[in-house]
Amino acid sequence: MAVVRFSDELKSAIITNAKDMFRASIDAARKLPPTDITAEDVYTQVFGQWSGHMMALPPVFFKWYDTFHVATVNGKSLGFDFKLIQKQPFPPELPKGGAASYESSYAINLRINDYDNPLFQKLAEVAQVRLDAIKAADARRDEFVDGVKKVIEAHTTLAPALKAWPPLWDLVPETFKDRHRKVVVREKNTAEIDGSVDLSKLTAAVTFAKLTR
Image (cartoon, rainbow, N blue to C red; front, side, top):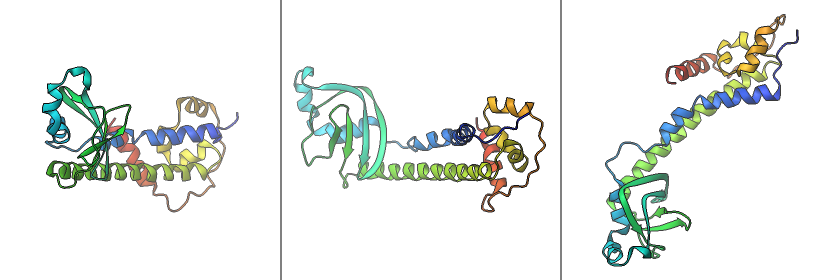
């Protein structure tokens, strides 16, 4: 029988599965760290000075939302949705030079720039913690994926690659596993994997992913 070769399809599937192993940790990093800042706090700081005037006008003058998005805060990327307890009015435009501006006219997407406001300073610190966590999670994923690439690029077929690093099996799609089970392997593992690849570290990452699923 023919052996299972590292086709472009198989390589792509393995790399995709390698990246997916880190999806949960990256999603967790994208969440805001624990903070006592509420959506109402942010809304009040941005719109509080006009709330009395808005409430005095008929509701049809405004768009009412119970969620809003903050894209950046004091120059730091946040990209987080805040949910209000109840819908509040949002003016169609914000005056220039205020605490915030709209990034998009199609959604309540705020860019906050008020460096002297303690609440926004604290929110900027939270944003930095979140950015650092995302960057670290991305780095761990990229390091793992790079190692997996080196393992599969060192071999032309699946069997010797599995012999060199057995946990690769967890990244192989079921269709290719079925093919592998049917073949009679007569190849010798003569390829050498890049010396910069720490196979024990790759194995630890696979084991951790299994435990946290």
